[in-house]
Image (cartoon, rainbow, N blue to C red; front, side, top):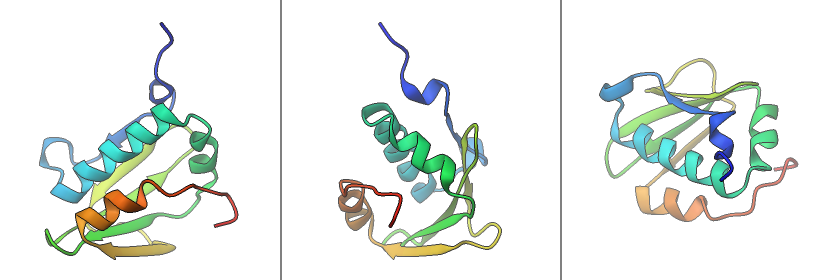
Length: 104
């Protein structure tokens, strides 16, 4: 059996067990996406600036920082995000089903 793609490109919660609700949801979605669509790892590695996501219905925010070796998800806003998304958790789950392209 082959190893999941996320073994070579892990999704890490910087706040560990203290990660907020939206960070946990995003970590799960990214892990599932990288396992099901390993080609998306190359796209993630190209993201050089953080992305912030706010769950409007659960009042929590996280920042996703993609690197060449891993993804780090932190509570709150970290760095200078290039994109900020504000949505309900249901909307975020729907967004995770969209096709990803390097051109946007």
